[in-house]
Length: 244
Image (cartoon, rainbow, N blue to C red; front, top):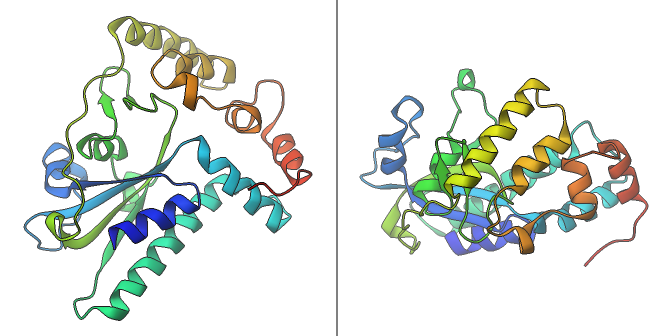
């Protein structure tokens, strides 16, 4: 099931699907513990994307032919949810023991009862080191050029799915980089996080992964609209041909 889920998500641009021990996460974040389904060692998955998700999203936008209030968020939520539902439904149709699951998106507020500290999930999954000083997660491969989108928990033990054992990540940001991020963060706070050029400078501080995984083109313009607007970027995508 794990490989089917992972390949299904990757097809739609979500190449990050890393397993972790829910009990490890719950020990670190007891206030927002994830469900264990009365399992001794339940498994969870942190789901996310790099710049590679932009092509599937752009093709989806062209196919729909319209721009919703937040098309990127809608695409991510709907695609992840549909892929999980389809994968688990197919699994349940051929297995006597049915799989239940709990899906939480990265921005679910605490009052919703579905809050998850997604950066801690990514840390215990061994994907990216969560730096508590800067509040950034940095991967040894991608640096800071990725986004977490959701956390999935299923009522199965970690060892049942053949998922590789996570190895805790090592720090990626240097002390010099952390100091620069903290300096720029203060500037961002003074502008109420509205200056995209400062936000981009913060992300550009980390050198790891930047050469290969930094955003570019319409993807960069959408998330950091310095000389354009998000709406203009989306309209320009609608005018472009389907990508493969």
